[in-house]
Image (cartoon, rainbow, N blue to C red):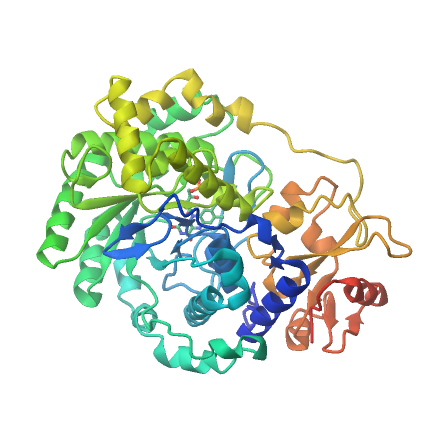
Length: 580
Ligand SMILES: Cc1cc2nc3c(=O)[nH]c(=O)nc-3n(C[C@H](O)[C@H](O)[C@H](O)COP(=O)(O)O)c2cc1C
């Protein structure tokens, strides 16, 4: 049997934190995200909310996906204002080989990803590292001076996809590990580098997450959803959210939204996906039973709208017969589903117009321009995936939160309750019963859905008729910001002899899983993650990868094939050092 080649080689804690210190000191940036793009709480707009009895400072965060696999991604989201993190789904099959490319975000979002690419053991280590990093950075004086008190946050574990898998000894060990990371934290504290020495004793909770979301995707049997929720509640005493799929709307409604309203005739629906998934009436009965089951145990049962939509893979970008649609069109589907549930479950949901026991989280086509509207409906948390994969990356979350704060200020709302009350008042004034009905009615009008429709989302990306090369390019920086793993390094090069571009781009190979998102947004012809110099910091990883690329030694020497010397001189120009 050949040994499995891991897609990612997470950086150790010391390397990650040392980079933070060097980069911040030299450039006022962290992992390529400029300080001016960090989210700073507006003291006049209190964005805090309560999730499962726990206060978080904003209701926004990354959805389960490529932004919640690695520790540095979680830090980047936090800098962008995330205070709730839906961790990448884990499951018993933890050695998946995902085909590449696996992300296609040109217009509508598509992907063929599955669950965590790290093993369960690696995932636990990575999430623990992220948890400690947030505690350290929250107290780190240079950042505190810049951001002030950043407030509380919570991790949300995501699991899939069947009862037997979730009850397996390996998943049980993972979940119990997440519930008490005490021993691992103690080991990690010793790795905190000198620049953060005064944070080695920073207080950190040993429980990593507050509640769990069940992904009912990838063939999760409808019959087993209830069993899984009950198992999680009774075995681990957890609050549980069920992430529903847009197939609940039925194929006719989905087609009306996607094809008739939004004009996406090119998208081919897959009737088999609708046939296999949970049906609406059954979902209603299940929600009632799980609400009661949770109440009897003093736990909370919630819903999340929605996961992606399985469609036929008619594009020649990613391999396979099916792909999963996300982004703008999904927004209309999830809002329509919200309204249907709102009508069918009066007094049951904890959203605008109701004050029921079942909280509703939202994750479908949220972007900087609609996050305020979603939060106004009482949805929490509101999480984002596709929009963060567009140029600007994690900084787009900051923009959305700033817009929300501004809108609250204009409405005279000091907190989210005030913001929701303002939306309710506007709904009544417009002749609707509540803000959900108002929002959905708006999205059914051509003016309301125009920004989600094909003419806007179908725009071609900018293209330059030039073959991408190892050095020099149009230097648009898209590869840096669209990479969820922060696997691109940009080094200014305008002063460098023999180079023309204002910046050179290097791939941090250990953090790159070849998802292909940089290729989509690169205006030149070629794949940046393959063509640009691939740098390893660990010689062992470089050898494991067949010495494909370059290894950067501690003294700054670069070893590898042709171009090694030029890479070393580029790295020497960087305002902060990648190695010691
Ligand atoms: C590349 C990619 C990977 C994803 N992986 C997961 C996952 O592991 N678990 C999950 O529950 N949802 C996953 N999702 C779905 C997202 O969490 C989110 O619910 C969905 O994409 C809708 O939000 P969006 O329109 O903001 O992308 C993934 C989405 C994308 C685009």
